[in-house]
Image (tube, rainbow, N blue to C red):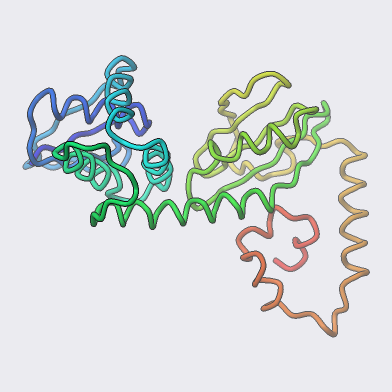
Length: 254
């Protein structure tokens, strides 16, 4: 078996598919370079992302697969689940043996795995959209931190751009260490240099007015909350506790 190592980008995975066919490898294992552990018995093929190769593969996919299936492939890849690269590749490989265009209705074990992951990713998209709360920096930049279970930031950008189109903003994934910045015209990927803890309030200095608003909102929530009737189980039902750290009104429950 050939172990194919790529840089972790979707274009890198597409390039991997191109080179697997180019070099006529039969049995392969595709893995991100950050997860590969050196082994003396592995046969290795290192992939260097090539935009031209990636585009050629994607063009071929468009001719073979329905638009919705292509979307599902990308969303499944965003799940970052162990082995998803192999599941996607072997599904594609088996699909290209069929003459007709392939859609989601085709029964296939690999496709079932893909669809299950897509459902999980879409649920996470909904949850992240629900708990996004912007704060204000000293230079009036609205920002928020997230660390979702899956790499859903690319899937919520369109929603944020439409909802907050009149403001520039920054959404940063603290786990994957990248963010999206909107400047009222375009959205760009950014990476920030934090000292140790990216959630340290001292790293992004807030306006005094913003801090006052936060304290006022917390006091309102505390006054509206009846301690004698506090039910943590009920609090968790609509939103899991792992999301509470992004809600000002929930911080006292953590």
